[in-house]
Image 1 (cartoon, one colour):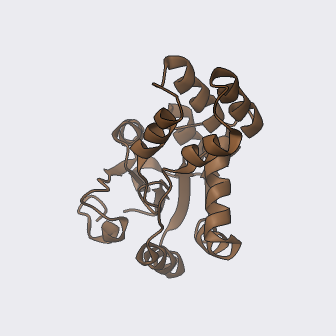
Image 2 (spheres, rainbow, N blue to C red):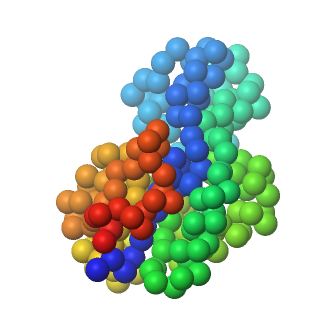
Length: 203
């Protein structure tokens, strides 16, 4: 019996275009994401370096890119938050049937953009639906590393077999499954989180 639900954020609630950031950066002169740049992005996502350190490193590597153009390119993947998903989430939270958590690989630039674009009222309304709101850069852990799932399970005394995890990235759900957590690898092109309660894996 499912008692706990752990949601990802991007492409679960807020729509993303993950490729557009690479496209925008390429237009600014970043020809490809090397291993060094990918590792830098992971470190930033885990909050191991500050936003200014992250931006300064890119500016050192690509001096022609202005700070504002870089930030705009970095945030360009963030799209809309369909109202029907918030309605679904609020209904789920108000039912009190489940303990609800958010677990997201999210960096400071992205969450700052979301707060500014949504407005604090909407962001607070969204955040208050969750018992705990875990962002990778705040807890210094990231998916699909095993320790982030163990942290959520142990911190909240959850039973993995009673916990349902929704994420659009397959490697994240694979790791959750290995730990006994029931998972839904949601395809954002053909599925919507609002259909959660009708999933056979959930029931």
